[in-house]
Length: 161
Image (cartoon, rainbow, N blue to C red; front, side, top):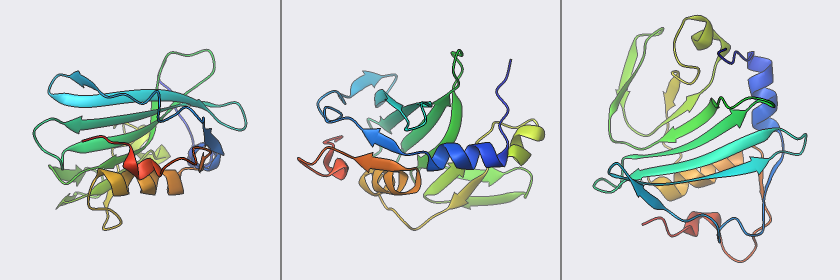
């Protein structure tokens, strides 16, 4: 059964406080997979919601990356993409609006796109808020309710290169 969420539910999940554990950096090791470096880590939100933070970057192109926030409903093994921060490596078209652009962009899950039969996070907006994956990580943390309990260094210094 496909997960369907309303815009209000999506907004609530994005706003839910998500504290990164103290050992977050220690356990965030990149693994090579199909030409990309990647890691994923589960995080439990303040209200008990289960999220997964995924980082993926091409081994050949520094601008080809995705920082993804997934929601995993209780009792399910399905993942719902709430937000995705992409690099400047490909052209994107929003099929409903028929708008195409090439640049850094942020995908957001919407009720409208789910109802139209598209992937939940097909809709994206071009952004100038970041110019590399460090900035994209900082934007996600700022936009999606993350609280950094890891005081030893900035999360933008994850050492993902």
